[in-house]
Length: 402
Image 1 (tube, helix red, strand yellow):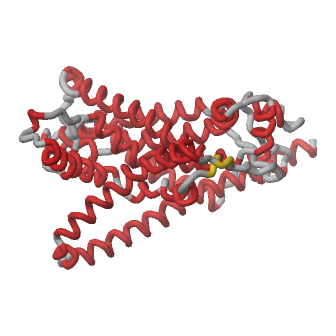
Image 2 (image 1 turned 30 degrees about the horizontal axis):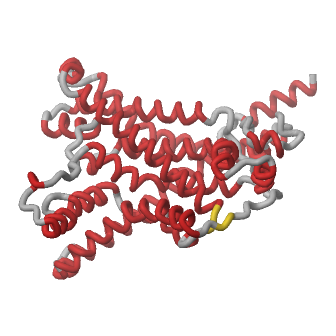
């Protein structure tokens, strides 16, 4: 009886609200408030145009958005994972600075990259102008050139801006893996491709899935890039219905479709890593030993890693610098200093709010994990990778079957 009373008291104490819980609830309320507002407006429109949207523009918006997502997912997964694998597992020319340079596209908004790509590749841009002068072509009818304002060009620009999400998480996952697994795999006859597909990729799959999901969420919410390329997506439909059609209810209904896509991405990401949610966090493992690549293989690795940096960072910066050099009076524009100050202020405050908003729920969860550990429950950090891939079978902890 006394033991039961003590358990009841501990349970009552566990549910007692504290500062971390209150903060987490307030942050969750701030995050959920826009979603609730959109749902309310969507279900209570002043003029219900949902049947009209379904019969006219919504299928086109949805099809273009899905195609955009598929293309961006494929490119970001390929480029981000491939670059992370190369800079982690191999030494080749330029590998050290490329390790950091592959993150530079995060500093360039996707819509700025869109402006730069169109400026560089358009009919009046430098590339086609040089081609016409070199080969003596007089007009666009004399030669074929890919359409610059198209859905697939938008896919390339968005992927070049968003692949660092996948690269950053995949590189961290590869670096946490034990070198012992790769040594055993090599001893069993696995080559470079076998090491990647049978060892590295299965263990890094949760991180890669999370990075791709983040990139796709950015893709679904993007407006400036697709607008500049003339691609009609769900986000352009929201603005068109709201501003041009003056119908907030219809815009909220399209936003509801966007919200459903994002929720679907979150669900797919969680399902994809359901059985492989934890990497091996044991630091007492043999570190990876990068292998040297020389000759054609080394320079091929350099080109593969340098190309996304060139498209996502060097090209936009080069186009902006060329315009700035040709118009130096712009550096003395009256509002430039105020705009810079506002940008830095907003960025700093947003960074503080983001870190604070993410830290409070994380600390609350960590506090709950410590209390659970004190009661005999194993915290998440003590678990190891539960995937049934090769290295887990070769180097599994005897207690890792839990």
